[in-house]
Image: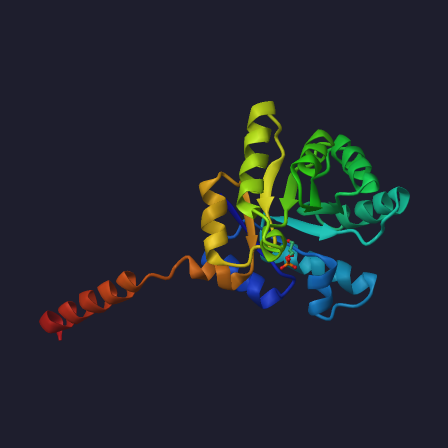
Length: 219
Ligand code: G3P
């Protein structure tokens, strides 16, 4: 399973990257705004900085445009910034058409804002590299989010689609584990939820005992 970090915060991306378990980054307009990055030029510089922090990783950069022609223009500008950029387009009619065009040109794409099996089917048919079901937002409205991830994984296996299932909008460490159990290819998560995987009281108490026993003999 690949781990992406779902943030545009450079310190958090650096920290996750230094842990040695990071395969990529996902951003969206809300996450860029949270970092206070204004204007196209600054946003482009920021994407390049992210790419340089995660060598070889997939870095999703989302288009703002909503009509097909503007989406393609914007996606091409983003893709030209760095070879690691993945163009992130929403699961709308224009977005699916854009993904079909860009994937046909050999570019990596991420179909975002996916909440149903039907949307995931369209994303795969369009040739998306990644499909992003929003686990947390479905959980927020009491919809079975893990069941959706599992059904997408099974559907892609059944038809042999190469599109990778990228579980997004992860709210908890348990979500990561549940997505892993049903075979999601990628989870994109906040740093705190990735670090949550480390936590176990028996690891902490076991380490304390080892260190205490070592000290008894070695001083
Ligand atoms: O990757 C999509 C993600 O950023 C959305 O997360 O927490 O805004 O639902 P959230």
